[in-house]
Image 1 (cartoon, helix red, strand yellow):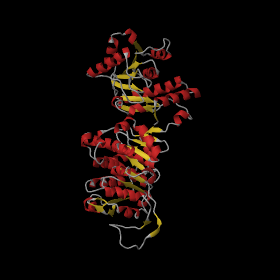
Image 2 (cartoon, helix red, strand yellow):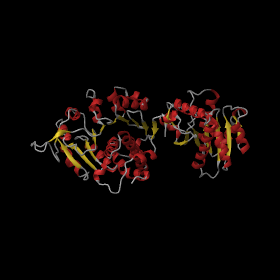
Image 3 (cartoon, rainbow, N blue to C red):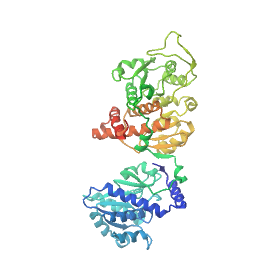
Image 4 (cartoon, one colour):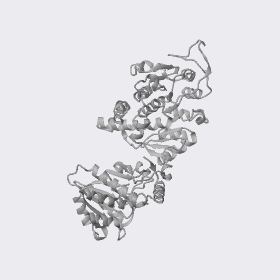
Amino acid sequence: MKYVTVEEMIAIEKESDASGHTYPEMMEHAGRGLAGQVRDAYSHLAEKRALGLVGSGNNGGDTLVAFSYLVEWGWETTAYIVRPRPEDDPLIERLREAGGTILTLDEDAKCKKLGAALKHHTVLLDGVLGTGIKLPLRGQLAEVLDWVRKTLSKMDDPPHVMAVDCPSGVDSDTGEAAPECIPAELTVTMAAIKRGLLQFPAYNLIGSLRLVGIGLPKGIKAYDSVQSEVASPEWVRDVLPPRPLDAYKGTFGTALIVAGSVNYTGAAALAGEAAYRIGAGLVTLGVPGSLHSALAGQLPEVTWLLLPHEMGVIQSSAAKIVKENLDRVTAMLVGPGFGLEDTTAEFLVQFLGEQISKKKTRLGFVQSSEKGIEQETSELPPLVIDADGLKLLARIPDWPQQLPASTVLTPHPGEMAVLTGLETSEIQADRVGVAERYAAEWGHVVVLKGAFTVIAAPDGRTMVIPVASSALARAGSGDVLAGLIVGLRAQGLEAFEAAAAGAWIHAQAGLLAADVLGSTASVIAGDLIGTLPDVLVQLGYQ
């Protein structure tokens, strides 16, 4: 699903019209799709009566077309013209001839007819204002929308509200919203997801979000050139790695997770189990040796690389041991639960520095014998860097150049502020723009976590996860996400696909955990792992 600015959407429609797929044809497709959404969403209603607030623009036209179809399908419809349309508007005449009722604000100064219509109808379509509005709203239009909003809030049994393309009064670029906006339980947007709909406060007003097409022909360059998308179940299912029946554990790769410290023992466990649950064939935990006894009973499936430590945090000399054990690693996660001690910071410096000869140690610390050293040097596997690893990374001069190509960086806004020097408020004000800018500048994949997580690749591709839930606002949630990404990366997915698919699955696990427990307040990070299998089942991934 394309994720577009208003300017991009205008260019798409303009090019389509010039190519021969005209504005009226686009409106016909949009209106029929809108009618289908009304029919499908409210098929359970015993009384199928729809009222539409109709503006002078395309949203009003979409609503009128939809009502003509709904009449054919047995619905009673009333179009209430809030803003004047042409006297000879063929869409109004079409609806009238089909049997729909037409009312106008000009003939209803005190809104008595509108009030009666709100009580009579079971569904209300908000088709007054579209994506081109400028805030604030003023005059009679603002008064009418506010009157409807207040009237609905006082009704014992108000009609179900569906917004056409966007709730009237929402800025479809910034997500700003007029106080007069009528909250919708369902928003049906046309052709592509508008950027403002996945921003606050607009997201609080749109309800569920659905997309209908406008019949765009193939080869519309303005459409094809848009590289920002909203993740969908279909996209995720398509990019997940195959699981052939004749597979063995090596088929699905080895994830090495270097994580943990005495104060953050659980981070390694959460990441490790998540990597396994997403399908990695083998997971090795590289942790301070002092944590082994606490973790071993929790994760009998993992193998271990015990690292030298200083007061329970990874020591700088651990870099040599990790490098000597990369021969079978297909992806590596660094950073969850690290802490910010200087010796761990030096570990990261040495790990990213000059390569050394490989020597395999199965368990424990560096061996005293030099026997078995292989003369070739090791290269770093695909990396995912998370949590404190990001803060430590920021201390290294020219750190983007020290990383393997297409490393996945998973900052929350605070960590992104450390990496970029921006204020958190600046980052949150333009999450997509900031992620895209630094992905291109650094040459790595950026996963900017938070409501509507943004995944940006250096080549300009961007994926937005259409989920905002406090169920994910928990310590350890990021460790699970990092584990999912490294698990997918270990199975051979490219960095962008692994990051975007992992983030979508992670978000769905949070939503499902909240449903199972009955409250977002009760969800903890371990619950996300518990719902991962159900998310994969719902995707049809086996």
